[in-house]
Length: 297
Image 1 (spheres, rainbow, N blue to C red):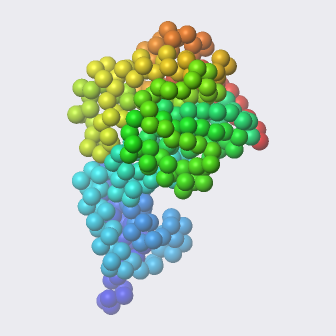
Image 2 (cartoon, rainbow, N blue to C red; image 1 turned 30 degrees about the horizontal axis):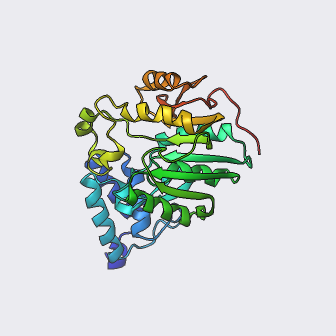
Image 3 (cartoon, rainbow, N blue to C red; image 1 turned 90 degrees about the vertical axis):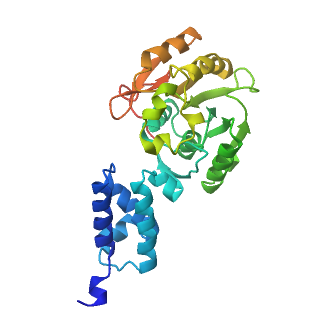
């Protein structure tokens, strides 16, 4: 057998990486292997399918090997590569920000229904982190302008970079503050947030990908996981316009409690919206994606 015949290809490298991750009991081994291979070999998903026998040079294989070793130690793909897709955008992520998750996209499902394309509105993302929610909405709604607020200077730097990379920095600002402190009454049409909601005692039992790599500031919701909502509910009521909409992410078992907190703050018509896994995920006074038609262009 010649050296050329034995050389790894995109297909064999993908299969071998998938097998190693599967053996290491990594969730979604095939997807993770593909994402790591794409960056290591400078290829796309289409390249792997259309040109599967393209040879992968030694230096690229060495890089892929280093990625696989890190993934086997339960480092998330987003941390290894320094980026993560969310909604329809790609974001830089660092250890200073929560890695965006598909669950959070349930907030955007609500917002897309509430604000048809080209409608002008103002919004704020409280605890913006990487800027995922804010930038995901701005990318979809050309008439929107927004603010991302966070207590972390490092997180705000990541969010600003993401906004610039997406050419959205002309429609948003990022401000260091605690929740809505410093913003005037009735300032925004829309308020969104993915606050920390994991009970403190549950954090040691989280998957290593979350427990060891996401900032605990963005995870720890206090003894019962509801501390942030007690602070947020009256503040959101204060800064939201009278006919405005809010949408906050919650833990799958927190729907009734968070709904009650916002009702106690004075909100009417508060509902709990489920995510694609049929779990409670968002508390809002906006439309429910499951019972409302999607607005047309």
